[in-house]
Length: 219
Length: 277
Image (cartoon, rainbow over all chains, first blue to last red; front, side, top):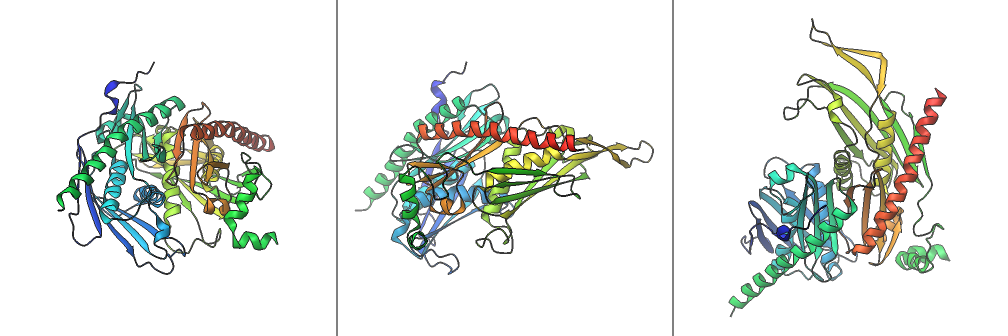
């Protein structure tokens, strides 16, 4: 019998900083425990004729791993981040332009895809690109005994039976993106979605607080 | 007249069909295209299969090679899947290095193999830390008409069931591997994962098995992979508009029914091969 642990929705200590680098139009870092990602956004900017879309902006995402060149694994993560950003941004306001999101992995200690999505959202906010909703991401790991752990570390991920990453939208708290490995039952899936939606409240409150704090400084 | 409307306003054209709960090719919203399967199509490969879901045609060839096991898992062999989308299958793919869709599909197949425990990789090991099998699974799309991921999962499963590996022994004196091509044994498949893909239109209507046009007009895509015990091996929704919990549950239920249909098809084809021999 699986019990919903009261402390299930506990996320590791997270933090973010915006506008750190001068060249990109928007930048941010997002830190979850020891996992840290630096994001930079360029946009709306010029786009290559082969990639331009006549009525909307083209979104490109680049994930650079800490070591080596981007491989197949990074491409799969890029696809997830790109499609989530495409749904959130108001692309029809900038036809024939490009929005490029570049994510650099500073340190990977688990929940990497979640941290990438959170960093991308903060960077898009920093760049001032119009969006119809914000998004945040939570990772759940199901241990071999059936316990659900949110925001797992790299060691917890390795010891888990299944790993589920969800991106939640800020308006209706529905699932925008889902990426899973390992096998799990339908009940475990529903529980993980419920836990992720609850944990996303904390992150959305954090977005609100950081934007409030930032703009209240400007006199 | 309809052809003109379709080119000028493709989204409105599809919407007019969806309002009547059907699609331009006459299917219902929850209906899959006819699926055909053929195995042992490639004589030079150790295992192969060809699947057609509607017009989407995908072929898989499995080559087994001998190599030393990886350092972090000396008692396991490994499987290397690779999905190739050549310019032959659709005009949207250009020649050159694999694009994002092909790489993301390769990663998805690798994750499905690992998540579903399709094959016990310890069985691929011949001698610990010295010799093991590596299975190169090359999946190539010959005709792209949507729903690539489902076709890749089915064709991989069928090709692995069809694969035969020769017996390998290590000669104690010379310490070399001796391959006996005459004696061949099939692979032991633990689980039968089957995928079902869905497309979301206008945030509310869900259709099953989208064609290439429907995929390009949809607002989100979802692939659910289940195995025969109704456990989920993958929920792959790379982004797009949000999906509510009940719609997701509806998709999972449809995926579970599809699993039974495809498992029956694969078993029938494999059995017919055995009786033909």
